[in-house]
Length: 207
Ligand code: GLN
Image 1 (cartoon, helix red, strand yellow):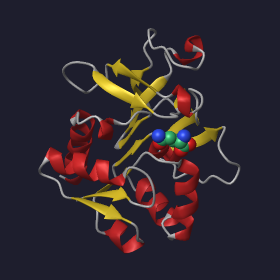
Image 2 (cartoon, rainbow, N blue to C red; image 1 turned 30 degrees about the vertical axis):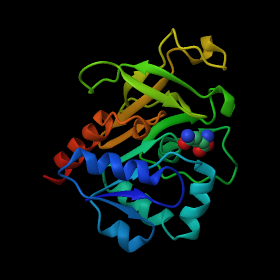
Image 3 (tube, rainbow, N blue to C red; image 1 turned 135 degrees about the horizontal axis):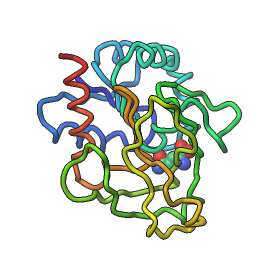
Image 4 (cartoon, helix red, strand yellow; image 1 turned 90 degrees about the horizontal axis):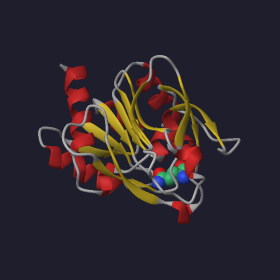
């Protein structure tokens, strides 16, 4: 059973993608008792500063931190990646981190909303053609610890509103143990391969 943090963001899209993977149950999580009932969590795209505030309001911050510290599998897309990072650059000073990923991310790294873009991305562990990756006011990984595997980086040919030279080569998909994160939104494309990869991680962790 996989929970999707349902405080804000594209919750429905993640629930639909997980359900389409088959073989797992996907449920929204808003309360500590709902968190207790799941084997793994997905943190959706949205606005990390808002989610951070609501995690406190809904008494989920500490329980979620504790589950992640106890090796519960987690997948975060975009704002979810930001929440999982050890440290955030260009965040709000009061923004809370869940931890789990030994990375420093830069929030809104590619620029403003108008600098959102799509590109084809080869993702390590995702077989077949490169996937269509949608970046919406996305972060990138600025620094990663030794235990973090880089699964995908911004291709050189990507044209964004941001300084392309600065964007090229930046990690945008990472994995550390059972923690997976992408700066982009596979839940928006109908390509289930990242969610399927996460379901595999969850199956391995719960076996
Ligand atoms: N910029 C957002 C944040 O800071 C993330 C955007 C997204 O999830 N699409 O949380």
